[in-house]
Length: 393
Image 1 (cartoon, rainbow, N blue to C red):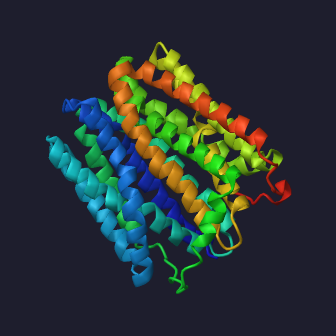
Image 2: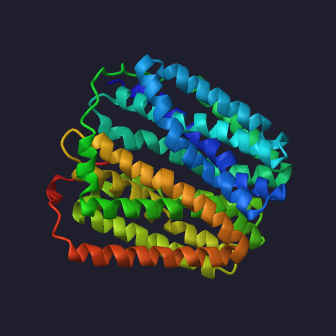
C-alpha cells in the first residue's frame, strides 16, 4: 500500500465535510428567513433520510452492477454543486421541496461510494480508515467557524455558494480515488435477516440506534435556530460547531480502547445517557456561552454511539451477514431515526420553543434508557465474547 495515495481520500473527506459545515447548519435558518411554518421546516428537514432509505440502495446497487462507481460519484457531486448554486434563488416551498428531494437522492450516494474507494485503497490496512476519515472532522471544524463569519458579513447565500466551491474541488479530488471491481455473487439467503430480528438483544440495540438517530437529528438541525433565539451571532454558531467537532477527535482515536475495556452495550447506553444529559443542559441554558460549554459533550454522543454501534452489530451478526447487520443499524439510526427527529423536532420547536423541545427529548431518552434497562434484565444473558471486540479506526 502506498501511504502517499491516502492523501487523496483524506483530502476528499476534508473538502466534503468542509462543504457540509458550510451549508448544513444554515439550511433551517434559510427556511426560517422564508417564513416557512414549523411543519414545513420539519418536512424539509425530515424528508432527506426517508429519500435516502429508498434511493441509496438503488443507486449504489446500480453502480455495483455496472462497475461505474466513479461515474455515479462524479454525477452526484455535480448535482450537489448545482443544487448549492441555485438554492439561494428558490423562494417557494413547493419548488424548494422538489429541489431538496433531488438533492437528497444524489447527496446520499457520495459517502458510500467514497468510502468503498477508500477501503479498497487501504487494502489490508483497513484499520487505518478512522485515521483517513479524520480528514473530514478537521475540515468540518476548520470551516465551521469561518462559515459563521462569512454568513454574518455576507448573508445566508454565501453559505451555499461556498459549499458549491468546496464540493467542486472535492469532485476534482474524487477523480484520484480508486474503486475496486464489483464482486459477482448470488444473493445470500434473505431468511438470515430474520435471525437477527428475532434476537431481542439486537432489537433493543436497534431501538438505541433509532433513539440516537432521533436525538442527533434534533441536535444538529435545530442547534443554530436555538442559538439564534438566545441572540447568538453567526460567529458564535460557527464556534459552537468547531468546539463540538474538536471534541470528536479523541473519540475517533480512542473509542476502540473504551469499548475493549467495557462491554459494547454498556458503551451504547452510556452514550445515549450522555445525549440525554446534553438535552437537559440545553433546555436549561440561559445564554450562548453556556451552549458552547455543552458542545464539549458532543464527542460522547454521535461518535461514541456510532463506533460502539458498528462494533456491536459486527459482534451479533451471523456468519457472512455482517453487512446486513450494519445496514440495519444504519437504517434505524440514519434513516428512520433521522427522519423522525427532523420532523418531530420542527413541530415541537414551533409549539414549545427550543427549550421545551430539548426537555421533551431529554424525557424521551430517559424513558428509552429505563425501558431498555428493564427489558435487558428480563432477557437471558447474550452470548458475546468481550475479548474478541474488533479494533475500530
